[in-house]
Image (tube, rainbow, N blue to C red; front, side):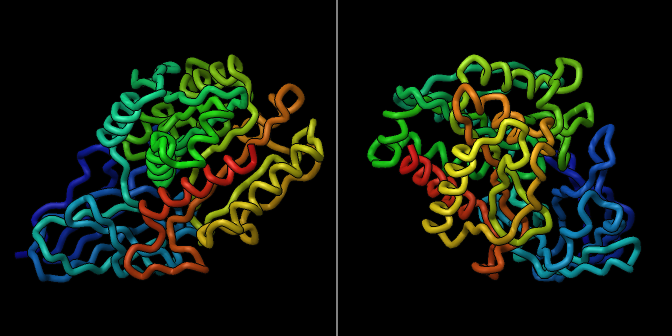
Length: 378
């Protein structure tokens, strides 16, 4: 039997079906609502076990980050638990840029995604299970434009204020897998690094800052088509209540350390972006940031410091971005060191895994190394 159905009418689903012929299909990616961003896909195919599928996602030179498609392999799962990689190739000259995915399923339903999805149902399980752990308190920092809670989990009795927040860009699902690893560690009271952090710090953790975009299958924006990581200078209830709620809570607590968790489409590495270029930059802030990233690179080969973004010139930092805004906002009062962790959609150039590439498992492991490094720093 040929392909009988291709469907994306579910949590974080995204695909447009143009044609199906036998075991081949022509597809494209739906843009974020009220936005031109498009890159995230997530759909399922009903088919015949043992027969190769050929799926062509077209128009990708017009996607948000065309540089992300060369050398990229689509994520695939038949049980929605283990996510491997499917043979994929990219031709920028075919139908406006085409990613061709070839895969032979062992079962009659197979799922494809840009990265292993992190569902809202799993998010609610994560929040509920963590909130029930010893020493953890829960607070709602506000609501999204569609009324979803902005969940925050807090723990620790120390004076050092640490904020960890993820999925401002909802299609960067790596970020919430990282959060799951972080919360697993922080609720394990037998871990010595955890005990140090809970003694010295008060941790504020927002696993998903953009639940509307996550549920809708967006790459980068909320319900209103707003990129939340360009709202931190002047967030509003009308456009970005998610950021407004988080930033207001940060103003209440102060911030000594902050980490914003993301994924990068093109760069095949995990790396950090800092706050170089903020007007009130101090060498002390910069030195502690550099010590952190180099210490983390020494801990794990899944993080490195050579590949990354260009550094802003002095005084030229974009203060609408959270990492820059927080380092500037809390620099004088708290000596704030804030940073943006980026993880790849592809594999890392120095740690290729032919079966999974960069994976949920590696996101969670990297979270543990990030927190262990922070424990050693504080």
